[in-house]
Length: 461
Image (cartoon, rainbow, N blue to C red; front, side, top):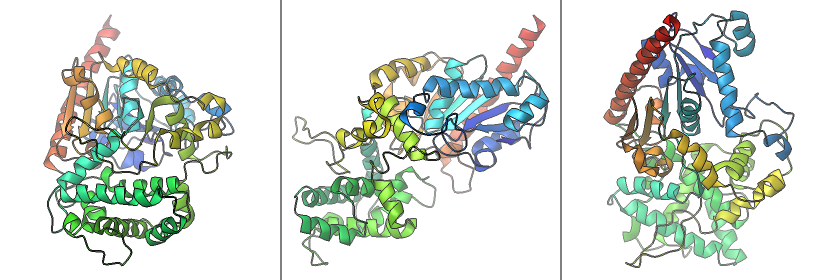
């Protein structure tokens, strides 16, 4: 998909991908990349990722088909598009990517992406430096983790910054964690009547206890990925607003025998379900990790992403390990202990066969795909200080990146969450987000100038 509205001859080509979602016009029309194109005379080209949306090289999503879903194949797909664009063959471009104008071979390519597409952007610059002049990689979880309990610790850091209504800044986090522990006592009790009663109060369709716990966590953490602005914080409006009196309230006003924190948690889930508009079948699909294990039909983005987690980098969002430090305290749990590695991993061979029987080899994955980034220049890595994915980004997962090579920068955006810097500019954007964009724009212009100098040198030789 192409937006050439602002393109001037020889201008930069901003490449992107929708990653683990189908491609839409918003991917080229409504991002900060579009704004970059406007000020630099550039073109935005977004390429759909193999096995997502309409980009299906094979007729189904069986394990036998998905074995062709590898990082190398994905990157080569995008590299092939870059070569086609820069072939300067208008007919070929029009047929292959819907581009009906000629592009100069010397037009520099900047790959831009956030979250998983941010990792793709970084890998493209690292693997194809002759094709990609630079990469803006926002909130990119490039460090694979089999058990990613760090996600919830990041969520907890955000909770601690939000003041519960009528309470202190840490009270929301403490009460949330207490509610999860109280709910676990019920779910792990084996008492069918107690479990049914709390599930009825939660307003959730009939699910097994582990699937119920998974659904609750998915709902509770949705706000943590939404942008914080100068006027709102979605973690407050979707979570902490419900913990109005927190740990100081111990009486059970519902007559259920539940703690005040658990009652607040139930009210939060009720509110989230009502706001989401999700139907009962949609809620079941959201929570059930083993749903439709035999369905290999196309157009199932959740199935494809599950395959990548099974075979690439793990990233299973599990409860923290039950451990204590010397002070007798351990990591705080913000999700049920039912959500362990086995809960997620056990579905892998059921969905994809023997090739997904063993957990993803994240050590080998990191040895290849994290190491490739070590000495790569012309990179702009950003992550929000409140992003729950931050512990798996370049920002914190590899100390050697604090002083990256070449025209590169690693930036923590204070108070921001997930991929805020690449969203369209708004008047309510945090000052830190505006500053990140300004720095990124400056780097991108530097990469463009450098690429043009290098291009002139090649053509003059």
